[in-house]
Structure formats: structure tokens, C-alpha cells
Picture 1 (spheres, rainbow, N blue to C red):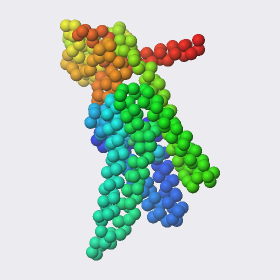
Picture 2: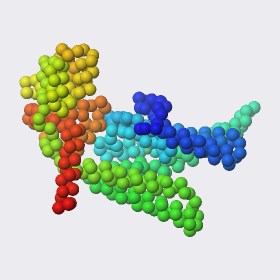
Picture 3: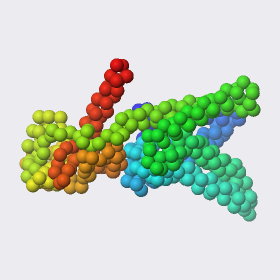
Picture 4: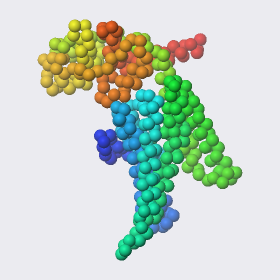
Length: 373
Ligand SMILES: [Zn+2]
């Protein structure tokens, strides 16, 4: 993401701070100062806000680490003024995975709220010779309230909140993910409208609620629901499409004893980026473009394909659903995105992200023609 700075790499995942986030901290410092008129007021306001975002960060890592248990990798986590965003390869392969990943975030806040409550109850008001009253309140109570709020807010059943994913996971339990997303996105939009109406009625003095900030959340929910519906519209183009319809059928095949010099000629001659390695009619490995360049730079053009190819790769059958195959490929950590298609032990095609992208473009164009005519 642009406009963000790297602040650390816990668990091997980049954590970034969006620059608008610093503006928010400055705003809270100013507000703390203007309310109390002291530097201490400004500082405690900033500290409270930092604590909120510390909890948001732990929440995101709840998602990240649960996803990792299912082999789903996370690119990075960015802290924005509206909350945290973890860019994951997938939100879950199955409804069960999606449900557990979505719930893992709020679960972290439930734990923090519980610990804060214990802290608030258990720390004695005074220890002999040492006054802990300053420690006792309001820090534990504030921490608890913040986390209860994060749980409630994130479980609003609307995209892009975790509650929206929980809802979709439950609705798609019996298999229809496209329908489930449409319903969840629709509910999200309804929640956004309801929230907007409540805020406007509050501003007009009809309801005893004065929270203009909720209007931002309403807009945020509306945008999230629309984006999710859009993403599903694209996926639905791939729904019920088989691997056979989208696979690439004209490509070069390497042999275990081919040299990297030969591969480099094929690479230059055409559009193909990743090469299947075939011995006696059987696929024995894959040589992705990035691996090829690394090997070429490392051990030179006379290196044999056999010594640098990947022996662990996933395959697909021509009759499989392309949607399932793509999700499987994207979820595995560091996997080759080009997948050999095998029928009765024989290589008959390759699925590449570029080819599937072209298939989607062709489909979209044809739909346009259908509507126009
Ligand atoms: Zn979350």
C-alpha cells in the first residue's frame, strides 16, 4: 500500500502504518489538549488511542495466525484510521475455515477484555506504602470497554466487518457461496442504510443519539458490501466453469535433462512463463519463472532442469471446477500458481492466472454483447 510505513515484522508478517493514521493521532492530541488545556491531557488522549490500535493489531493477528493454521498466507497488515486490514490470500477454503478465521479476531478482544476485567477486580486499591489507585482506574476499565466495543463493532453482520464473513460462512455451509455472499452483501447494505438513518434522525433531534462519526461507518459498510458483491460477480463468472474450458493447451515442455539455456530460449520465444517438466510422458516437476531466473543467476546456463525444478506441485483434472482449483492454488504458501492439468496420467493442459484472467475478460465481453443485442 502507498502512503504507509513499515513498523515491524512480527511472525514474518509486515505491519504497516498508514500515514493518515498519524494525522488521526495528531487530531486526538489536539482534542485532548483542547479539552483539558494541558500537555498531559493531550498525551493521555494519544496513549488511549494507541492502546485502541494496539488491540486492533492483536485482533488482526488473531485472523492471521488462524489463517496460517490452514496454510493461508498473509501479505501484510496495515493500520488505517478506520481499523486494521490484513491482506490474506484467501478468507478460508471452506465455510468452517472462514468461520474460524473470522471469529479468531474478535476472540482475541474477548480475551483482552476478560484480562482487563480481572486486572480491574484483582488489583488491590492500595498496597502498603504504595498507592496503586492511579493504576487501578481508569486504565483497566478503559481497556475493557475498548475491547468490548471492538467485539460488538466487528460482529455487525455486514461486510467488511468480521460479522459479514461469519454470516456468509453460515449461509454457505451447504455449499452455495455466491448466493451466500449476495445475501450477506444485501444485509450489509441494509445495515448501512439503517445506521445512516439513525445518525441523521439523531442530528435532526428526533433520536437522542448524537454520533456523527457513525455516518463514516455507514459509508464504510456500504462500500465494503458493494466491493464484496462485485468480487463475487467476477467469481460467479468462473462458477460452474471447468478446468478444461480455461486451460492453456499450447505450451512448451521441459525435460529433466534440458539445460537452463534451452529454457531461456523458450522463455524469450513466447509468452509462457512456467514450464512443466515431463519424463516418459509423466509430469515430474515444475519450473516457475522466478525459480528459473534465480537458478540461472546462481548456477549458470548449463544447469540441468532436474536439479532446480520443484518436485512438489499441485495438479488438476480437466473436469474439476476452476474456482476450486484457483482457490487451492492461491491458499498454499509459496506454491506455483501455474498448475499442470493431467488426464489419465498424461499432461493435457496448464492453468495459469493470466489465462484465467483472459477467460474472465472474454466472458465479460460476451455478456456485454448479449445485453446490447
Ligand atoms: Zn477482524
